Image (cartoon, rainbow, N blue to C red; front, side, top):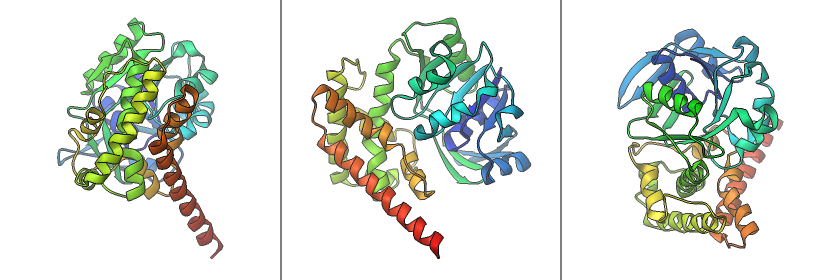
Length: 316
């Protein structure tokens, strides 16, 4: 199968490495940069369970270098979705399936605006990854599930085949007949940990050793569950503690959330698609979400401080 990962950050590189090692023609597509150049020159170094290995994988900065693919897995940051897919049309053929595995809610609609709804399927993954240095990642795959599904809930031949391909690459993947509920389940996990680690700059080990932060996380998740239930979404995670416990399962104490990684790199976060989505939908359905609104405001404050500092440094 010819596969392209749109977005070659830590998680995109993790999926790309697994699929390439399984024998698929796999491409990482991202803007030119040190990570992409290191992969081109030396391959991708993957550290898993403290075991280091080198993976050869194709890397490109232009979609035209890749050409049409069978499967396009979208793993760019949420706020970059529209721009990224608009610049990746050279990857699309009549049979190309576009799979979003991004954090948060709403990406499928953005992708469908460009490629058509019939070519889009949705998914969520609990696989984790950290970019340690250009061309070097740490990943957590074992025990971490990925769920994919058709937007209409049908178990189609194509989604079943893609699940089989991912499983063959060592990625525990299941087909969901309730992908909206599955997406909300993953959102609850992100709500539990992402903003809190971004605000406090704590790793998982540090976060989970602070009782006050646990209580804040559980309150944020409780709000999100209430919003989902008001929207008629069927969840498999119905208690805040379930999301809190699932978030850390199988990951080392040194693990950093994608939101914290973004801030450490000086990038804006996906807060609008995670806690921000809870706030917007809460307003629509008449559910109060003061904890999530506070977390959004705090992250926006961190982003503002970061932007102001970058502006000051540019003036010097």
